[in-house]
Amino acid sequence: MLRQAAAALVPLALAMTPGGPSVKLAGAPPVAPDVTVAAVTGTTGLTLPVTEYLLSDDDLRLLDEAHTAALGRCFARAGVVPPELPSLVPSVPVTHTERRYGLADPELAAASGYHLSDDDGAKPELELTAEQERVLFGPPQADGTPAADGGCSGEAVAAVGGDLGNPEAAQRVDVRSVTLAMKDPRVRTAFADWSACMADRGHDYTTPWDPPNDPRFTGPAPGADEAAVAVDDVACKAETNVVGVWHAVDAALQTVLIDAEPDVFAGVAAERADRLDRARAVLAARP
Image 1 (cartoon, rainbow, N blue to C red):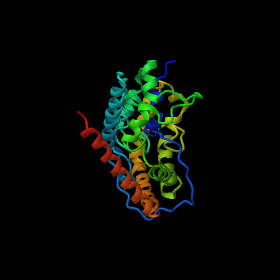
Image 2: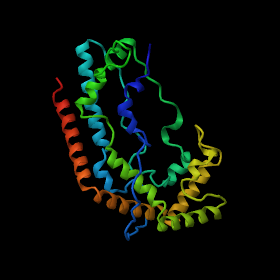
Image 3: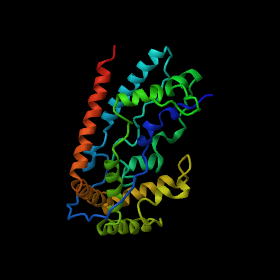
Image 4: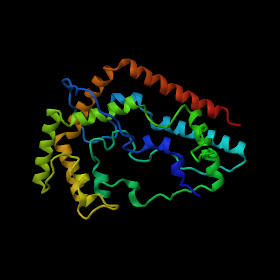
């Protein structure tokens, strides 16, 4: 029975999607301290405290390359040609903050509205032969359950120190800060100003997350009025400095959340360094 290659990478791919795995948001909400708000129109160059603890694109490329090398080595021992699996490094967004505060690039807004540049067509699904599937996952146990060691997939994941995902603690802070920031009075005021600006342009939205979730614009291709709305959205963000305010509060909240768990984040940093060292060792051992 054939199985799509994506299934082989479930433990790796979960945290590579824009949303990532579900993250439990617990604890009393912190309050952001006073912040200095800069005038910000774009989002790609912004930084956040938590990025120090997240895997960068360069980190992901290193881990992905090492995972592929370890997988190939395992398949070679079995005498089976490995499948050509797609890279797990996302092509969009191009930075961690590119669409964190909604669309903010006027050129992208005019070109494709809220749709990403790779939305033009579905990527082809790669399928495995029965032999590749057996080697990748390992032969099933007598009761039909998956192999305990996970086959070559399990070996490759172990070689790079675990799944190609970010630590739960860093993901939790990353999600919680931007969500809590939306409830901050300073951000809510900026949202109200943005909403008024959009109303002046003939659009009825309450927050910047409303336009991209408008049912008219959630289809496989941009809707008829999508680009026009997106252009106005970006213009109103710039006029009311929504991104500047939201980012300032978001970053301040992240600092509060990270400082509240110093031991946890020291461990996260050490784990990241160990995983990258493992990946470099795998690549150094290639013939």
